Length: 283
Image (cartoon, rainbow, N blue to C red):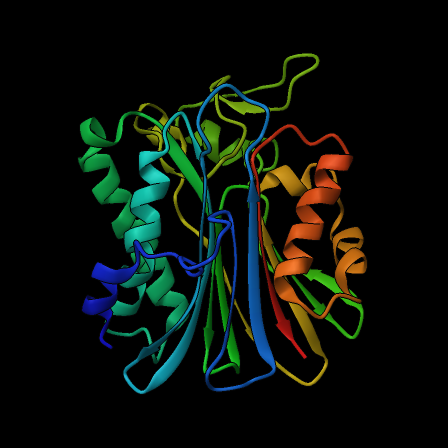
């Protein structure tokens, strides 16, 4: 399957045959030891669910790609829906994807954001954070992110964060250099121009002069000590540390059960936000 063909198929979620549309699982055809599972729970807000998930394996140009992503929308669910359908196709269609995946991810993020801004009337004025992970032939993991959805890897029992939480307080100088400001009102988190609690995101046309959509990108090789990878929205990370998340699911061999366990644990800890989680297991 080519990247262009993926463009038309990415709207299909893994697990469409499942009785629970908010939970699903899958496995690699290349390695029986690599599996994934996901689970989503709507938060206690009055708006519709704004988290979207991609979790699937695809055959592309004689390679197997595991495509995993969490998109956490704000003020709109149309932008993460578009990202779910198009971002990976844009990455894979980059001419240098196979030789320089880091550069391909950066280019695709930039081009995708430009399209969203161009079509802002259709997409409303909201935005979305994103964390994406591409597993190439079960050997190489390419992770990119904007915002505060996070990717964490566990090797030999040790948790390591693969993404960066793009916080306004940390990126204050670059925001101010663009003409914006970072508010820090008592009882609230720092916000760009008093509005958005992340310094990088897709969309957000009204704030775009002061925001960045440049992703943090990292490439990790999968080795014999690699146990699992967690991707989740901030609904999980607001109430759990990387180490707590890893420790709570290391004993669970079923990736879907592990993802569900993490969302349930976040609810027990009084998370009120939408919670979405993907677990990729390397047994």
